[in-house]
Length: 113
Length: 115
Image 1 (cartoon, rainbow over the protein chains, first blue to last red):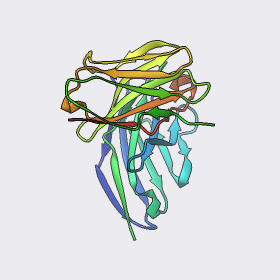
Image 2: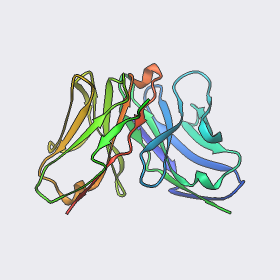
Image 3: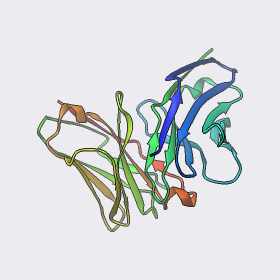
Image 4: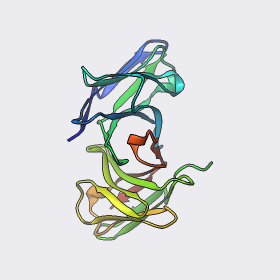
C-alpha cells in the first residue's frame, strides 16, 4: 500500500526566507510524486511532479523538489518566500496504471512580512 | 483551453436526500477521478474512470457512486445524505495514467453542505 506523510501541519516563514515543506512517502513500487497547492476556496493547482528521470524537479512559481529514494522523501523548497505563497500544500503519490492519488494531510504555509 | 469544470459550485441538501455532482474534463482527457476533501480526513480518493469504465474505487460506502459518459463527462451521486458528507468534492482529469507521465488537473470543486 502507498502512503504519504507530511511533517508539520503548519509552517511559518518570513518573506524572503527559505521555504521547506517536508514529504515522506511509502511505496512498494517506483513512486510517482506530486506537489499541489490550494488557495482558499479553490481547487488544487499542480506545482511539480516526479515520474522518472532527473531527481531534482523544478516547478512553477520558483518551487522545486528533490526525489531521494534512499530517504523516501520528496521535500518541496523555494529559496525566497513571497506573501503570495501563503496557501495549503499537498504532497501526493500516484499509483501505476491509473490516476488515483494518495494525498498527505497537507501543510499550511504562512508568510509574514 | 478550458479547465476541469464542476457544477454546481455550491449546494445545500437535507439529510436523507440525494445529490448529483457533475464534472466536465479538459477536452481530450479520457480519465476522470473524484476526491472528497474534509477538514478532518483531508483529501480522500473516491473513484476513477477511464473510457467509461471504473478502474479503481476508494474506501467509501455504497451510497457513493459515479459514472462516466462516452464524451468523458462524469457524474457522482451520493444517496441518503448524512451530515458527515458535507465536504468539498473535487474532480480531476488527465489524458492517461500517471505512469505515462500524465499530469492530473483538478477542478475548483463542488461545496456540499448537508443540514
